[in-house]
Length: 415
Image (cartoon, rainbow, N blue to C red; front, side):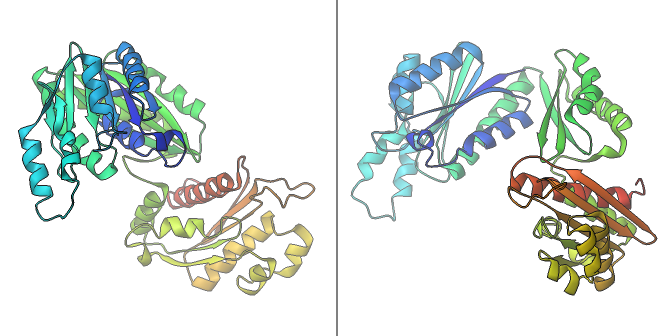
């Protein structure tokens, strides 16, 4: 399996002035093509520091992807650093020059000459032409190492990266190596439990690798299969997925780009059920997630943010005596919220959420992170008491995802 390191270049990144989204996108794309990203490095606009980063990266990976430093200013030092590092002279690419002329044909500027240095690339390298800007990218093959230099502007970088990956795929095909990836998403079980389930998959040395990622309670299993033939790699993934689904059952809610809200929408459609949601501590987050799904209006009838006790009483019909006796964050109140919104919207399913997101608001016996979630279906009431940790945003996200998962399991008739 090809190993890679991503080097993002720019003093603005090091100073914290911008968020490095390029490394995230590159990592995702490389992973999808069976390339194993081992390191991500950021370095400022300093040629000496960049060459140091290149030296370290070339000692530990086969493929280096850089982004940034291909602009027209004196701070753009990537092409010079790479040229010097590999001892390959820079030459101006004729096609890049023609593209630059066309780019400035209808633009009035007296600084066209400054952009000509963007046509310089190391001699004998693969040129990656820019369809969205002026910077020229390139791929240098030096011995067993390869370095791909891309611009830092995301729109330009994305297009150029796709061009390189097409070349990479053709090279793999010629070398009779096929890499495929697949992922499965789970919710409601720990990462340790998931890892125990996938440990057998790690026995396919050289053919199969798996890693797990955790985000807001969702544990994702990423699977990578490499084989001489595409059919064999797919067969390995199919066999692994089948085994995992058998072990993990309903905790698996989707694959690929599937989300919990999408899984819920599919089940609402399949069961022809409508839903309404009453939220307090999540502030409408569940409703927001559901309405991200196109066509959800057929099933999602109403969402209410009943944040205050008064709203819970006036809008949802929660008996005031329940709040006085048990408090707003309690099982009886969340049940009444779910029943109230179900009745108000005339929905098949009612959902209620109430809790203490923090960092303030805790009381004796009710700590920050305490959340109650209720799902009311015809003839059935399910209430879950949760204790989440983390920031206020973490608690809201965990609560919303847990509520969606409860809805999903309700529709599957497994809770």
